[in-house]
Image (cartoon, rainbow, N blue to C red; front, top):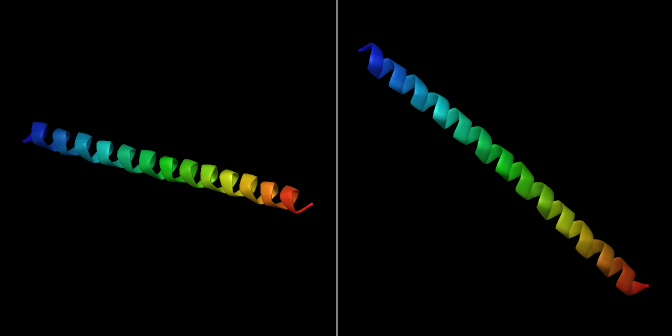
Length: 49
């Protein structure tokens, strides 16, 4: 029974780590998106001058 409990604990830890990695990837993707939108905005401003 002890071994089964340890497996469950390891699996739970793995899911927590995966959830954290997915959140970090989402933040990185949002940052890159904002950076690209900023580049496009600057290019539009330069083309209007």
